Image 1 (cartoon, rainbow, N blue to C red):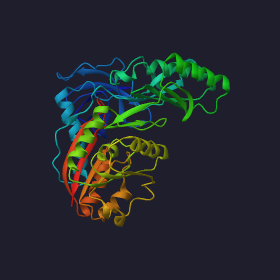
Image 2: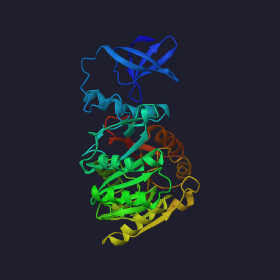
Image 3: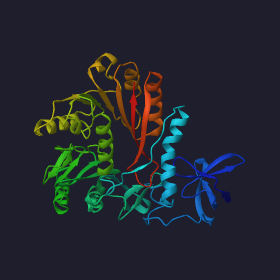
Image 4: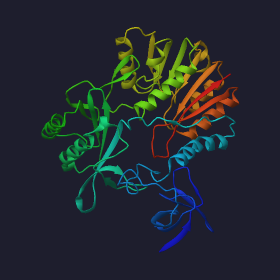
Length: 412
């Protein structure tokens, strides 16, 4: 059964929203003012699948990718640039308003740069047992097979071909695969997850794929399969040898924009704590002029950060500590020695650490987040503890998606 809907506004996930007698209904790939024909989305009573746009917004733009509307990776390629920028900034404005936080939000910083330098390709057996390698479909469990992606960094050229080759070899295992590819200075770094233990014959076949596609490194669940070169990424003066499957900011330009904000805001700080430091994109740059304590729960990331700091001439002392900041946050009294704290947690935020910071005397906090909702929750805790939200800057390194990065300054 089909129905016609008038789209009233754009939602936070990029879906168009229609107001109906039964409540709000969400329709992907639509724009406000459009009249659309839709059908039910099984299992999602408040959502509809778009069949066609009957009356189109005159500002609608052509998508940059032929897979748009099928692949679930991008939400708003049809949105014109000025409205795209306003919508993405409003994701931050709305989250702050929901948390009753009063702060000026700066203009959106375009940090797409050359494109996304990390991608996770999924490989599954689909309909009629056909191998599909690509990205997940929107709100579905099947994989959309793709042959290119225009939002990826040129450094990932060849990554999709390598992912297909890996999937074809491992298809005999009959297991769904996640294949993470990262662009590094030495070439592609690829880690395969989901295969389970492999016999020597398949490990040899994977090594041959790595050689044929000239991968810098190929690992399986972090276990080395083949390596031509150490996958290194520059972070300020330092070169970091990445652990398998390491987390990086989505784009190199995004990392630089965040680092520039942090360095500008902490220019007078001489002792800095970098919490949820990862492999050190901020700690290693901060150490060019300040003493740094860097903490993270990922042992391999902390080890990589420490090795990079030790190997880089001219840095101030860097103390790298493995610490689960969710279960064992830095206590208020431990924070007394720092002039500034940088906080960059994963999507779930850092509620426990925020509560300790709220009770501390640290004069300056720099918060980075990829989730406006958890950022606003944690900022509310800090403001209630006596901090002022002095600056908020949205940074867009997730082009065409509903994700946005935030950098903020909080001061006593």
